[in-house]
Figure 1 (spheres, protein in one colour):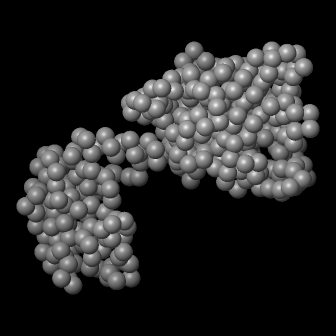
Figure 2 (cartoon, protein in one colour):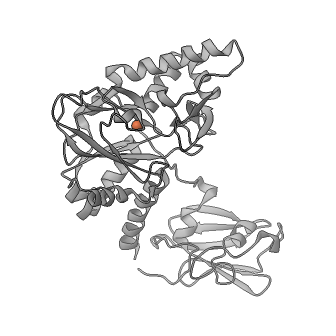
Length: 395
Ligand SMILES: [Fe+2]
């Protein structure tokens, strides 16, 4: 069923449950729904979220209204159920607001509606090797359901593999863009990881690289890194990943004092480059305001010498050493030798990536192409699919 009731966004909302009755109190409008539920909304909240063309720009659907124009104790002149089954309010100043019932239920804060948890996660160790989320490129491009599963797997696990992708440069941009806009870095948007004796980075050698996040020197570390296997015929050179969130969980449980240090004491990171100088100081484990881990900042070759209170130095080393040993434990690693056509999508602030050593002179060739994206791009892509689904369901 379609409806003409405006909403202050581009989403589509259900009309399955309608407003049955509405009444104003001193500071709220109380609603009883057709399914019997009751909800309450403050007057100031309702006025702030008026979706009329006096409050919201009809093209961009962005709010034009400033709170400075509304008294905190604003009162409606009248409140009623609209003909379409939504809420209708007359305000002082010759303003009529219509509220979509599905929109009101989506934002029903009196019944516990809160901003969606943006990052539901499931941590993993070596056992994920048996159950790696692997998707064919063809299905990711051509089947919305598969594309959605692929994006959600990256969100949930911080790791997903796409197979059977052409190995050319354009194909890499095409598949990488599936999660949204890519990020430019000081070495360019796309970086070729190949053995080069004179290459600027450690990645250009054949030595083993322990599990790490990239660009720990940045205030805002890239949220994703994407790896395309162009060729991997040399002996060795397997890729592996460690769920930094799982390692943090283990530390929190088994080494709580060291966990506390890694989440509170900052370590400084800086790049060694002739042409740029990035530098940032932050704890290796980043928590949100609820104490949940949100990011791991950890790159061996970018760590600066510690400069802390004298007695703190050996303590932080001991804590970080525990973290490093857990990263190196095989039971915390998922390994895969990428083959031509593989593209690995990795949460750069969570699924730490590493590689086994290889000998560039032993025959064959190892060529991995990489670029960066952001978590927020991934989330936006997921929400766009959900929006399209809701439009089909409610439209
Ligand atoms: Fe790296």
